[in-house]
Length: 158
Image (cartoon, rainbow, N blue to C red):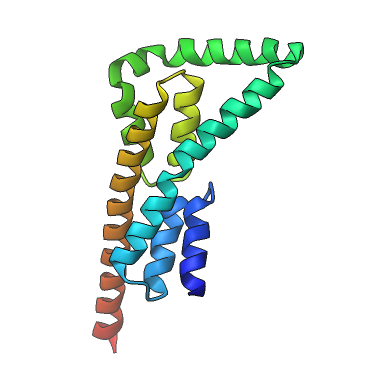
């Protein structure tokens, strides 16, 4: 049970997300299907949680003039720089960004980017969900392939 809890926590942590949760689970004898479902389900919950947190925090801070001035400048600059890419890739860009299982990509950053760019909430959640599912499949395959390869070399060398 302890390893399931740790897997769940890893799935929700910004740095680990399912990139850390699935390998941890598999290496601690949690069946792949269970590891995948638990990690993907919890990591997919990050999108709505982050979106609500950002919206609430923004609403509270926007009462302060200095915050609004800085925020508006930063958002305008980010939107200008990314506008072409957003128009070109749209929600597919969010899916791909979240699906790439590397540091700094994932549900947290994908949701943050979509929020900053003012993308529609429901479509963002669906794009993040799709990206998380793809990332879960990729991480599962890489983990299994890595374990199988290590086992082959360990057994072959003895």
